[in-house]
Length: 293
Image (cartoon, rainbow, N blue to C red; front, top):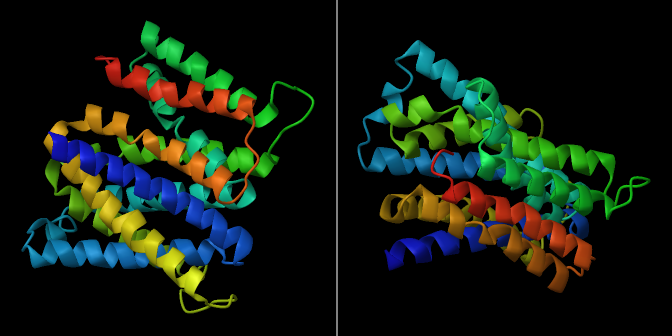
């Protein structure tokens, strides 16, 4: 159990660092969001598929033999995987890693609302409290309590909330695929297809920035430790301690992103921002204790 908890915490820390390094590259090194997403997806996807082939995973090509499953995989790749990657990193570019990560963590609330509408049943008491906290937290995070102005740009708010919506889609849509095929295969193909499609938007060999040691190491961390290693640790932790405890421990991600953004990149973060962040992050704890979620 201890190993699973350690792996989940490391995954959360790596994701939090990855978001902050993204902010550093966008704001200080002039890296294009589109280029970083393309290179991250392509390399991560290729490595995951290679990993599956190395262990003779029969699902690698079987998933393409069923037309319905293939269509679902492509939808997951474009709307889920590519959608959540682009909106999250674009939100970081237009605001900061802390705000973007916290807004994305309202994703479970989106799932709760969707499931309530789908089942034509009102959310239970815990879910209602979580939704209210998420709304209050988001309101104060983006307005500081003033209806007259936003503390972040409208495009940053749109991208942050879009990241939460695409995260909800990413979490719900591939359920049948994950029940039928290996998670490494589903995620691997999803990442690789997304990278291939986005390479038409920004080819990985077309760079408009100058490489230096900081740029290289930051990009290397995002691609490998922030993607491949974090994903593998998260999956392993889920198997060892279950999804509920793993999701609770990965709520450290926005905390890491906030601390790094404030301490390292000197991102302004007021008491109101911290209070709003606690409101949103606390919804993860509420939803995790809700047996009907």
